[in-house]
Image 1 (tube, rainbow, N blue to C red):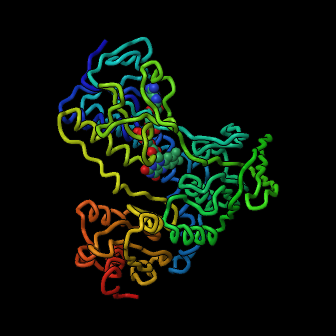
Image 2: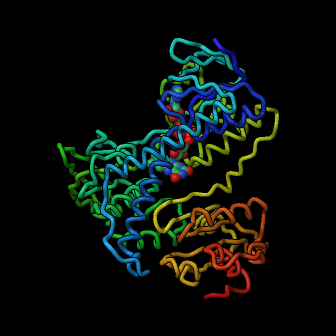
Image 3: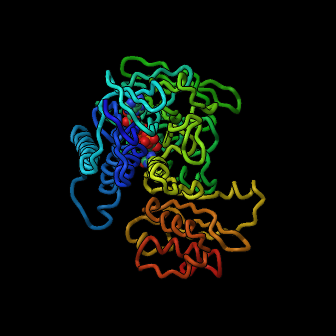
Length: 462
Ligand SMILES: Cc1cc2nc3c(=O)[nH]c(=O)nc-3n(C[C@H](O)[C@H](O)[C@H](O)COP(=O)(O)OP(=O)(O)OC[C@H]3O[C@@H](n4cnc5c(N)ncnc54)[C@H](O)[C@@H]3O)c2cc1C
């Protein structure tokens, strides 16, 4: 039996970042991980592999659609799916081994196996029980399904199955127009699949700024993705190599059917807390099955903390990481900081979509006086040169104080551009502060400055 200051259960972005920070702050740290490799959902079957496939399929799209326009002629590349999967697996391997290296460098023990908490201060892994002054649950999440839909990870798949299909399907139905469904749908649409997204609501990407939702859906349609909106999936019949999706349109209850080679169920994720022994420990949960925590990420049981997808808040890797760093600081007697008002969200399609802070819809609901500064990428020289003029930057600022309240970007590198606004918001900046900041030319970030100018006396290039 070994004894630690901290044992963390789960090595995803929440767990591994927390472990590194704990070790850096002088705490004797171990991480329990049941998977063969470190890095959790994010590195193994989430953020990283999906971005590798998005990148490869985007390159194909560029070659097919834009190379000739720039005078780059020749045969378009064809898809070697096996090689694309090997590239994706290599990217995963480099990242997960990188975490192993960081664990060794920081003298963090990897306790291999599935862990449980038999009592406060103890973590059981296999036959061994270890002592810990503090236990942090970072056990993440798993895909959720729908009643009447059975996942076999062959024909009816979650995102995990969609990352390793044996071949590119001719037809794919994606159930759910959220981030994961649209990213994976984009990958397969670019690789030649006929993709239909079936969504229960009337708008894609729930919770996102309404104007961006509409523009994003229009762009995806132009890329060949079909949408069936307001459709409640009743069941999916899996045959050997095909599936039938039965759905009802909510507006008139009419029944319909779609055939597909592969059905991707992307209806969301739920916390994964199986086998941890939380019931017998008496850990309080929310109605949605998340672990309840206080302002310091401590559960109702002293010395037991929880972070990441297993607790409330957006299920995002960087939110888990920030909580991991913050709880490490708390355990080391420092102040743990997570600003939940400034957590960016990104969709890595092409164009990318990114947002932070309030939407116009939220501000209207709150009855708050605000102004909108908007700038189209059509007025951005760099975007024009790169065939990336689709989309816009929209900044929302307080009408009286000019303080930035939120930002929404659809366009090139939106996922990177959003961070200048995050930093500005973290510092309580006004739109004018951004507008007065010199931005290099020609960059996409000039569109952010122009949107900030549009909150004041007006943009220059529109
Ligand atoms: C396809 C896909 C794409 C995504 N893309 C993005 C993206 O681009 N950006 C983004 O921010 N987020 C993305 N996400 C979400 C992101 O992956 C999660 O928000 C993030 O991984 C959560 O981190 P975590 O540390 O809470 O848990 P996880 O990453 O889920 O890690 C939890 C780990 O705990 C281990 N574990 C669980 N229980 C035990 C136990 N009892 N004993 C031992 N080990 C245990 C699991 O094996 C797992 O490895 C994506 C998710 C998916 C599925």
